[in-house]
Length: 164
Image 1 (tube, one colour):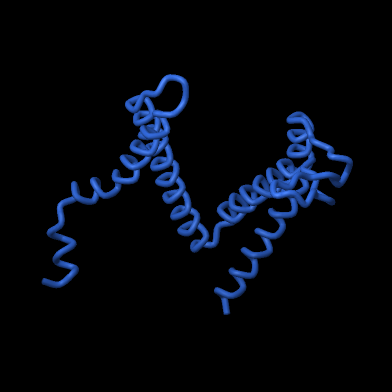
Image 2: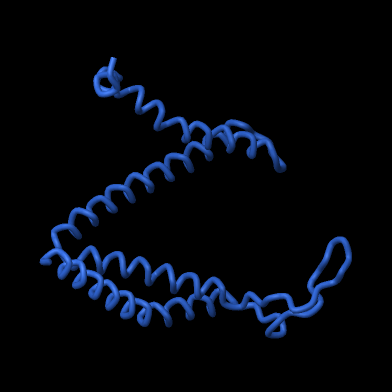
C-alpha cells in the first residue's frame, strides 16, 4: 500500500487525537505541579495544564493561519504583509530593549562555591516597571519607522527580482 493511499484511508479522528496529545501532556504536567504547594490537588493542576495546553494550541493555530495568509499576500506583491511583519519586529525589538533596561552585569564576583556578585555595573541600577513601559513606548515609534522602511525596501527588491 503506497503512503498516499494510506493517508486517505486514515480517519480524521486519528489526526485530532494526535493533535490533542500535547494538550493532555500539559494536563499531566500541570497535575504533578498541582501536587506541590499548600493545598495539593492533582485535578486542579490537571485542568490548569489542559487550559494552558489548549491556549497554546489555539495561539499556534492562529499564528500558522496568519503566517500562511502573509505568505500568500506577499506572493501577490502587496505591501501590507511586509508592513505587518515589520511592525511585529518593531514590537519585539522595543520589548527586548524595555526588558533589558536596568539589568546590570556583574563586574566582580566572589570565588566561593556559591558565588555572588560583589560589584555591579551601573551601581546596580534596577528599572521600575513604569520606567520599562516608558522605554518601550519611547522606542516603539523609532523602531516602527525603521522596520517599515526596511520592509518597503525588501518588497521593492522582491518586485524588481520578479520582473527580471
